Length: 367
Image 1 (cartoon, rainbow, N blue to C red):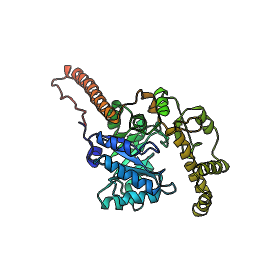
Image 2 (image 1 turned 180 degrees about the vertical axis):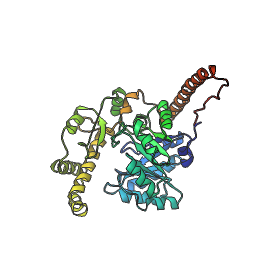
Image 3 (image 1 turned 45 degrees about the vertical axis):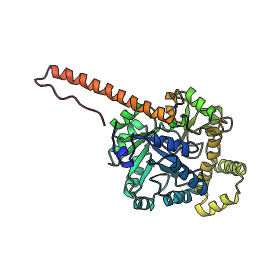
Image 4 (image 1 turned 90 degrees about the horizontal axis):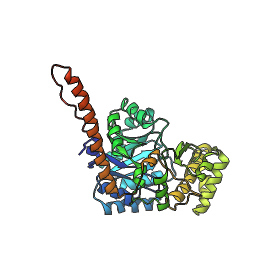
């Protein structure tokens, strides 16, 4: 068994996290992750407060293990959803794209923990100053809004500037990846794409089949989808969308189409313009409109109209196991990878010992 600061901080068995993926990390997947020994983070950004409350309570009906919620603070309604989670005293709060303000204080008052999702050292330091307990460091390989730097460089770069526990995300889907992340300075890994292709995941069967068939190269990274650099699965639809640059008219048109399909009044968008300003409103509406296309691909399996957020690790996904089966497989792979590294280290030390007066002790790389 591997013990790290992440397993100890969140009282979980394994240093494995299912991140709060929109439309993917629902109550069933989060509870399954928790019951398997990891940390599941419930996605609430696309929900209203009533739905958020229902999902939180459903998780608690399915597991007595720790879990979290995740939300992008920049999104409309995020604060209302967050308030529900705080009132419910959810053990772990994971936020992104915004300032935690008084969130850390309120969470710590009831004994909870706060994770900040960051993509660079600057954001990591700001989060640490705000009082967060851990960082979810998202590299370039990740689905959705990964950073500009790959995990191989980003994780050790952030480790150099902070002592906070790090959960590495982006490019991780195997036990070997877990060992690599620990070697880079992380304390655990988030494997969104890998959990998305599990039996408990709500992702449509058509989309799971695509994930299994796609290669590591079959993704597109661009800000043209939702105004923030984003990685999606390569399909004819995503190619077409990613080829068009972000502009105000396109943002408003997509917001209009989304509002019409979801039967939401446009008056809310107009109010936001006066409240947040034109530029930020356009960014948020563009981001919000993209959520509808995510739902079409993820939940409906409609890739003629929808776009699937996916990481490069999709090329390593070859089946759709249960969360329990996947967790146990990954941990077996961790043991195998550690054994291989220890063997290599032992061989190297044996070579040194052959020419040295005294044999040094064998290095143990178990965490």
